Structures are given as C-alpha cells and as structure tokens.
View 1 (tube, rainbow over the protein chains, first blue to last red):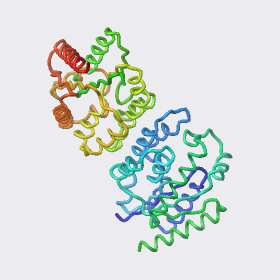
View 2 (spheres, each protein chain N blue to C red):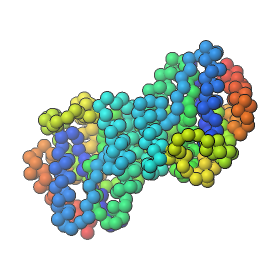
View 3 (cartoon, chains in turn purple, orange):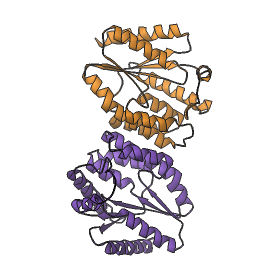
View 4 (cartoon, one colour):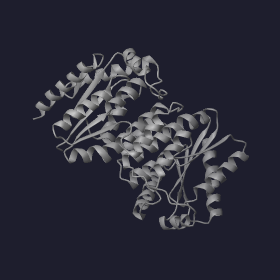
Length: 208
Length: 208
C-alpha cells in the first residue's frame, strides 16, 4: 500500500486536536490526499458505539468496553482506513490500538495478550508512525477542566487510572522506538507543534 | 455455583420462543428461581448493541459483528447471568456462544480459534445444557415468512449462509454430546416440546 497511517495518542488534555490539525495542514500543503478520523467512531457504526462507550450513566464491564472499542476499530479499518491506504492517502487517526492497551489494558487491567490477539485479527494493521503526546496527568486534567460540557464515562475515572494509562503508553513507546515519537506535551503549544513537525519530517525521510 | 445455565439455540423459524416458554413454565412449577434472557441483548447495553447488529440498513464487517456479539455477551454474563447463578437461579437464554460459532464462524467464515479465545475470557462460562432446535433451512424460513415486520440484517442473508449455520451447529453438538440435546424441530410443536421436556428431565437426573 502506498498510503501511510499515522496515529496520535495521549491522555486527557494532551492536545491531540491541535496536533491533528497541524499535521493535516502540513500534509495537505505537500499535496497529499489526507483522511482524518477518530476512535472510537469514524463510521456510522463506530459513532453509535462511541455514544455507548462514553455515556456517563453507562455501566460497562471492562471486557465489553474492550470489545466495543475493537468493534468500532474493525469497522473503521475496513470501511475507511484500508480503502484510503490502498488509494495512496495518508490517514491521521485520533487514537488507535495503542489506546486499548493503555486504557483497557493498563487502566482496566485486561491481560495485554487478549488485546494483542484482537490487534492481530480485528485491527489487522499497525500505524506506520505514532505520536504519543505525553503530559503529566494533573496538568492534562487542569486543561480539560476548563472545557464546556459534562465529562464522559472514561473522563470520570480516578487519577490512578490515568497514571496507569500514561505508564502503559510510555512502556509501549519504549518497546517500539521506531514507530513511536514521544512528544513532551506539557511544553507550550508552539513548541509541541514544532517538535511534532520535526519528527514527522525525520520519519518521512526515513521512509524514502 | 448452585444455579444452572441452559441455552436454546437454532436457526430462523426453529421455534425457540415456544421452547423457552415451555421450559420456563416447567421450571417455575418446580419452584425454581428462573431468569429468562436473550442474545444479543438482555441488558441496556446489550439491547443497544442488538439494535446496531440487526439494523437492516447496516453494513457491518464480519469482525465488528462478532465483537459486538461478544460485547453484548460479556455484559450479559457479568450483569445478569453470573449474579443469577450465584444466588442459585436457573438461567434460560435464547442463544449464547454457540450462536457465534454458527453465525459468525460457520456463516461468515471467521476462524473458530478466534471465537474460542473470546469464549474463554469474554463469555467466561459455558451452558450446563444446550438445546439445539434443528430444522431444515427452507422449512424454518417458510415459518418466519408469515411473521409481520421487516426482516433484520441477519435474516436477510442467503440460503447458503443458513446452511453453513446449521451445519456448524450440528458439528458442535456432535463434538459435545453431553452438553447438547439435538431436537428435531421440524416435528409438530407438541412433539418438539415433549422431547425437550423429556431431555430436560434426563439431564437434571444426571446432575443429581
């Protein structure tokens, strides 16, 4: 496949949206066909699953949460990501399988071997490049505290949950250093964006 | 656990509802605490998933279909079935994991090893007794043709799909003869119900 899949990962308040917008802009200026999507969601089915997953009044068990995440992902891969990659597009996704390892594995305690097995046949692909926007849990939460609207079911978790999520993300990044670029997302936004774009340029030059 | 889990399986038009009602009635007359449920569904989350799965306009990939089935099942087991079994209730369920082997495995062609792995950690339990209501595919479809309402997404499949579903159910029954009771559901209803209740009595006497 000629296209590339780039995922943007990180905890609450890490600034994924700004990074997604900056990446999209710089890739489109290079004349590339860019597809932007998100997880859970990105398809009609996926957005319906997202509503179930994030409903603040919901009471999902950890296993159902993981399976719903992968149901959304399986559909997104087959309906959106693979067709885009085949035609040569660059796909930017706000979260992908690493988020399941971090949230349902690290956060909820599901065995990572179960998640790896779902990754193999349900997700079926891995990103070419993953930006991990790493930020101190309290600093991230202070950022989202200013946002309007009710917190969703996962945002309502306790601080130790998010510490486990962060630690799992960092472990995964350390174990796959060629795929991951860890960005200090506690820095000022202009510094974060410059670092992301520098790392993108480095990664692309490595692919040629 | 003191309770028992009994699943009722079978293709379209096999007469599961009548068998469920007869089993419920006979167990309640014995003074047992009986819980009746269905798949996909049986919980608020499960019923929302059911709507996604059966939407006739939906375009789910096979993997997402399987994962949604198991998301519903994982929630049903933890929210309804396990608590009922722990308190000593008898749970009757209209379909359980065998249906995933039959429909998503046999019907859609997903590797049964993937389904067995989900059965291990997501379903986590097996029925004590499974009634397979076996009926010729055309005879079953002739029965549901008279029902009101639009056909759902799975009922709209082609005949060869249902032949594979039936064959997979029969293979599973043959491989687990102690758990399965295969009932000729093409027989008149009074004969079917008498056979089911005879087999129930036999199974219960074996458990004592």
